[in-house]
Length: 131
Image (tube, rainbow, N blue to C red; front, top):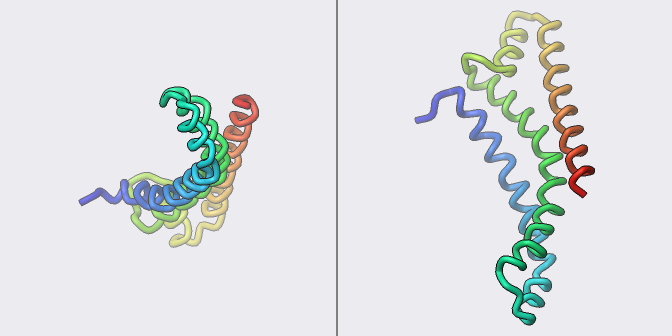
């Protein structure tokens, strides 16, 4: 049904979606009183979206994305090691492990960790500039 190179992406989505969706729903339920206040004062849907819903989403989802994206990268690499697509860091790690090439496994692992730290830094920088 899906090619082997697409399977790690599906697995990453299945890992990340519940985490981000849970953070979103917790924040929306916590701010449910604001929606009641908007209904009482007759606030338009556009203003409710702009001043209530979007700040809730920003407070809930952006910090979760900062933590979930590096997790997704690690999950994709693990999925690549199992699915063995034509190209990918997971395949390189698997080939290095099978051939007992410790230097290659270490290099790919350090590369994956560096990418995760860079993504966390970029998201943290974006969070500081957006505030």
